Length: 174
Image 1 (cartoon, helix red, strand yellow):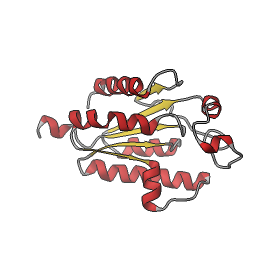
Image 2 (image 1 turned 120 degrees about the vertical axis):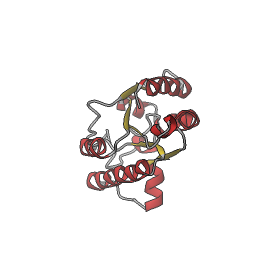
Image 3 (image 1 turned 120 degrees about the horizontal axis):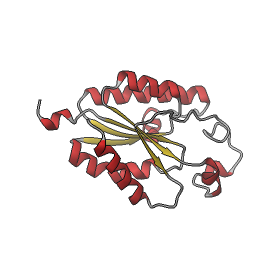
Image 4 (image 1 turned 45 degrees about the horizontal axis):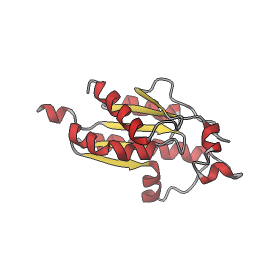
């Protein structure tokens, strides 16, 4: 196995509240991750929701979708492709399954304050009286021991947060 082959099949699981910057950061790091680790896909939970027509938002549905995302990520990893996957999926059960079943799993938590998200109106559903909003009226199970934490208090640019994340990723022995 060549050195470059060892760096394949990595899942960069980026989680956090909706509006925390997960997808924006994912898009910024994709090119560099591909350069360092090889062929890399960049998908979000929203992408998979659309592809598989996942259109329910209850806690049970969200958990089932998130477990499906983990299985999808395992398939991608087992195919020797890297995947940057940004998703809310704030469930301990999902992260435990991922750690147990995905050999090269890097959990990245974008830590953001829900009050700041609501104040900044980062997502339309934070403004209204919508139901089943994780962090607002559905309890979020925030990661207890992610591999990387990026704090987004909206004082740094997405570019700076992305650079900070890349530095931390490179320090992990893959």
